Image (tube, rainbow, N blue to C red):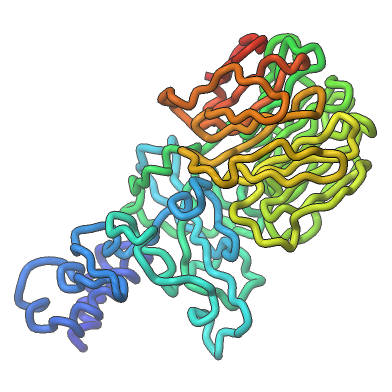
Length: 450
């Protein structure tokens, strides 16, 4: 038996499959760098690999050298999702985390192969578009784009993959978030309490959006698990709570009359309640990027969906164009429809605005430094202005949109995920991931989920 295999068996008896793989790899590297010192001196393999990422010397006690990949929200503008150019390749869970009531789940986002195959193997590091480095060039972040390893419970139809770009973390099982993921579990409890500052965002069940009732004296709130909460005069018409969803909900919009609502999932599945009429969906079709929101066309009663790459999908609503196929600085996070229904705006995470049809351009934050990414928008009743809202509740006004206040300077328990304007246009509500409601102008408080 070789020294390397003996050490491997020792580690295998004391670690999970994942941590064994990473530690065995580092052990082999340590033996090649300093074989005598590693065998006769106390300490871990990490202590002998002080340049854990090529060209990036780090103190080996720093996170970049611990063998795990950084959370996606660190490199994806605070968004806890696989970045463009990657896909969910597999997952594992950790028990005993202080962040979840039950198991905590991690999804590895793998780089997509572009322009080449696997060359007889299963990985394509030469053409996955990733760079092996400490996330954001900081040794206090874990590495990204370095690991050739795949659990393989998700997207098994993709045989050839790149390296692991980053990790998505959630209290929601992966097979709920992504229908391609199986329920076959792997476990690494060592990761139970891994943390990154951007992880202060939502985990488990969280609000994804809101819509105002026709009267303006109530509102609905939608959650990623399909549930809906009604407040004030807004009637409860039903939800997808308790039903199996192929993908999590990402948004909602009131019907043309305001006496019902549409819910949309990230795969483009649409669910209708009250007088909201089903006009079709993208649920059974392959999307380049996930859906990020839905907007109602009040003139036709139809609706449009926007995807992260700027694609627009219309159902009984005029199609006026999209940003699909164009290079975007940041993903699209929301949209709003003009009062005529013959135009719409798309907004990206940097506050960039894209106009279509009779939607006018009144300004953007695309060239400004933002404390937190933009997460949504709302149009004024006249269609001559709009509000943008950031994750910290900061409000940016354009055209005839009035500023009535924000939570930009306040400490929030959870980030803001959406907004809705009052029918008068003289106020707005903000909703946070934990279901908290913030009111400004003539927007009255009718309750919250916290």
